[in-house]
Image (cartoon, rainbow, N blue to C red):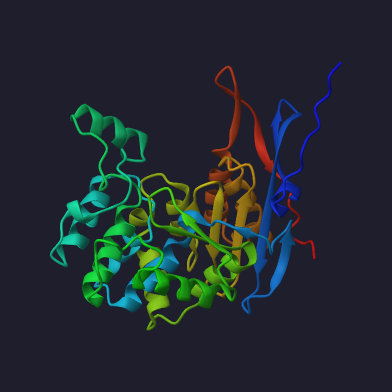
Length: 338
């Protein structure tokens, strides 16, 4: 009988440990490997699971840092529109109207957007969009707030708007500076994100460190403005029923941002940061792992309402048989591990 040899992944992510299991009627059916980094207020690793120094693509989890670069370039973003610049939004009316408002504030309209045309992210909004006869557009795509903010920054700084996605553009070079400043490390690689903007690779530790720094930033700074906007306008950050929206709403001082390929980043008001990367790219385990680490960090321990929200977020990862709950996705991380 012929045999086939398997090649191991050349990436350290290929050796990440199991961080969650999928249990059906008491039987482990599947497992998810991942990388988890929790940093203290000084940016030092207090919990590291897997290759936390290996580069990952945070994808949309980097949007708050990109928004900080927009502010430093002079973008006129405040309140809900600043939160929208950080968003992977659901495509609700408030999101689309907000993206258009950002553009109008600098004399542009949605024809200036260069993000990939798509339908609204939320399934209900997508169905309504199609029933109304609409086709995929850039403003409906979940990154339109970020791209509108980038264009606003270019207008404010006097930079070319036609090439704003180019990695060599002054705005994108400024984004790299901000990312390296907050993560405390050099960008390991630059690729193209799903929306067409540059995607930057940093480590899981760097991502956690950056979110801790944002969450603890002085309100009078640009970083503090980004964090405060995320906290004050969580529905603009995600959308109705989105886990990131509910987590930010429930926990005072917390900021959070989800990213494609199963990335989750959280910052706590005391400066601690958390990043989760599920290495198979599937989303069902990332929130369960994140909430387990947050509980271990003391979040919700003395507050029944916060604990209820964390439990409700976990419950979304239910395993069903014939339409009935028969199991769950269960985190295997030990928040007390060195």
